Structures are given as C-alpha cells and as structure tokens.
Length: 267
Image (cartoon, rainbow, N blue to C red; front, side, top):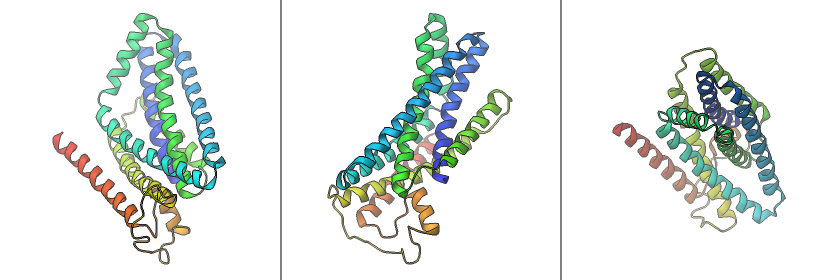
C-alpha cells in the first residue's frame, strides 16, 4: 500500500500540475471553451493507461513459468531504469516545464489548432499514466501480491488536493522538498527493482549467479513476514541475496548518489 501510494502520488502530482498549468493559461487568455478538450483528453489518457495496465498484468500472468520469470525480470529492470530517468528528468525540467507548457498552449490558441490542444494534455497525462502502470506492475511482482487500490486512490486524491490548493485556493505549497523527498524514496525503490530483476533473470539463467546466497538473515528478518515483507514490497529487501544482486544494488545507489551530489555541487 505504501509503495503504491508513493508511486501514484508522485505521478499524479506531476500530471495534475501539467493539467493545472494548461487550464490556468486558458483562463488567463479567456479561452475557457477549450476546458472540455483538456478534461476529455485527460480522462481518455487515464482510461488508456488502465487498459495498458490490464494488458500488462494479463501478459505476465498468462505465460509459462520460465517465460514469466523472464517477463517479470525485464519489467523490473525497465521500471528501475524509467524511475531513475524520471527522477533526473524532473530535477532538470522542473524550472522550465511551466514556461514550456504556456508557450505550447499559446501557440495552439494562436493557430486555433484543436488537435494540438487535445494532444498536449493527452500525451502528458498518458506518459505519467504509462509510467505508473509499469511501476505498479513491477512493485506487485516484487512483493508477490497485488496493487493496493486504497494506496493508489489515496495517492491520487492527495495529489489532486494539493494541486487544487495551488491553482484554485491560491496557496503557496513548497513543491521542491516534496518532489525531493519522494524522489529519494523512488530511487530506493528503483534499486530494489533492479536487484529483484537481476534475481529473476538469475533464476532463468540469463544472468550468472555468483555466491548464492552471499548471506542469509531471513531467520532474523524474514522477507516473507512482518517488517521484512513490508521492506520487500517497498524497497525490494531480500534476506538471502546473491553476490550479483548485492553488487548491483549498492553500485546503483553509489552511482546515483554521486550523480545527484555532483549536480548539486554544479548548481
């Protein structure tokens, strides 16, 4: 539930901010007649994301055992890569995204291009929706369970409420620390997905397994019960990993931490 909440909250916050910016620009330019275009395309993008999620779940569940291990491993690795890219993309684009969206909206209005207005919101929300579907499937695979509807709806509700306070209530909410704190959690989740993906590919022979298990602390902190299962669902905790998994996990965290530190020093 916590992992689902964090992922949906982060993605829904980004999507809601984009839609909020578009609607604000339309209101400022007295073009509220395009509200229906934006809202309709947003709902269509959400619906398409749900369809893609159902297809992805069916694909993973319908395959044979070996093929399923490959699919689950690949999904986990791709999700880890996209999560990492998303974090650095948002860090880089946070200051520019508002002016870029405003420019696109004004260009579409000047050209009276209805399709451009529809596609602007549709593809922005679809990108966030597709990322959400991929991440949630990877988390569900990793935890051996299902996506928490309560966590997802709570995350979406909080994101929409924050954006409503900003654009409707006129509140000044510090988004930078909010994005940074959720970003750190997401990077830790990505490290867990990376290790889990490697574990799955080790089992089908696609990745060589060295020294398995490197250690075994399941008797003290079992990954299938209590706190251990919570840590597994959220951060990919494994009580008896191979050397390959441990090296991949810590190499990822060290490399990402170094990259973040270097960017902050440069800034």
